[in-house]
Image: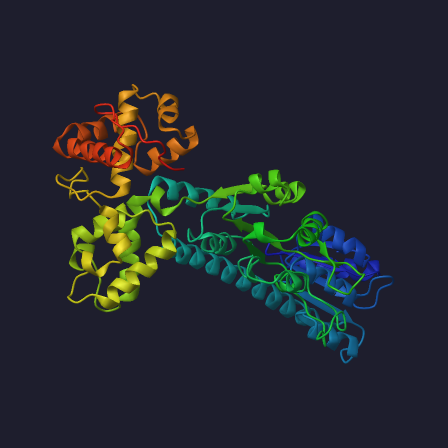
Length: 503
């Protein structure tokens, strides 16, 4: 098996032949090129583990070739060959990233040693890169919590797309972990050893956003006393994460489109384009298709960004993950005190309340609530009284089993839920007819049923059975009484009619 792939570059055929014979006898695979341009083309077709190049060549010399090779793959070792060991250009080449330099016509053993050391370094860097990538995978797998079907689907997609160079658009509500997913994609990619730059497009004033993204040249505006690279160039060879991409103004959208299409940017105040090599991951909590329809977001940019869409579920759509997340946050908030299991520090009532709450702020809000509760708790356990009122009240009239509690008190959500389910059951599970009776559109009804955990007719039947019991009768009576008190209207038995339920 060949020990390594070596590319020898020299405008003299005799030198190429000499090194080819010597290195092939050592077991290496050797290719030759007679110019810098030919060498770069050969590397594009098949990467080399080591490049040995003459420094004095017409058109493109060894220094220019070195820069070209490092731009393509910074880890490729380059050995410079020079007529004089003390030649300043050879020393400059080492300062620019060359592995070493050799004097032409030096002893064969010297050539063999330098080649062996360069390839050993290359192998060590490759192994280190793979190790860091594997460690990053384990690290991000631990930090992204979730075992629900929705999250397993997200993890599977991340594994599929991480190794590609495709642009990704992450859709999700605020607090669902979009940046964490972007970091995971970067750490699992071939760019894991390069920079990951995150920027919130909605947090930077419009007047500064262009300069922050694309950089500026000295003197381009008041206060620009030096050149500034900008986030895109800082992420060179790595990944740039553009959070809240829907907040970007039209003027910036045009420039982002050019970067995605041409892979080049114009720093503020410069008329010369700068090539960039970055992977773009964008994220939004807005419906960009709707923004496009409204004229707030460019259609062409949307399609450039939406090459691979990745949709993150809200926390209310993965309630089963709440105990795992709570366990994770408690271990971080109570180091040395809590090691699990969860019931040792969180009582059942508090957990049920956490699972009943809607979590508009998603995982970020849950983390804040757990941190607060772990600080203000009076005893060794977190109970309902340690949770914010709005979380504790979310359980409302639900008893431990999740059914409607007898005797109330009932929240507005309980009344709404009972009313919708009664109408739905009374209409023979006809959702369109139910929406018409309620005076809401079908999408609003669908969203509310999803919120109540109603996925199919079996769920409707189970919840309707609850309404058939004593608690359900009391709820319907409460709705009926509320209607009578409001305007004297009389609701149909078992199917109260509200003018509106809300959107």
